[in-house]
Length: 116
Image 1 (cartoon, rainbow, N blue to C red):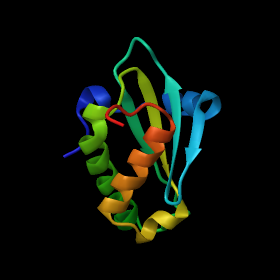
Image 2: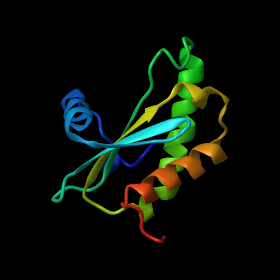
Image 3: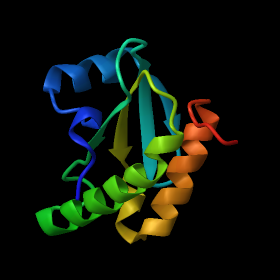
């Protein structure tokens, strides 16, 4: 199951705007780019390059794990943010728990995470 529809970032224009104007936070396997959107609910998009893996099966597995981590953390993320999660090369070896911990750490670092 993916993210709820109102929390999905889908348009390429949104991704482009966030990449060009957003603030970046980098971890081992993930990087997040955030852009405040005060009047909107928090929306999350995932970007994964073929450089991470040439195999779509592997890329899709990584995206599923990250989406699950996002679903878990979504209630604790402050509303009003557009977030792009960029998957880095090291993500190939990571399990769900690592994505969850790293995503939480990056969101705390970005000061958009409640409950810390």
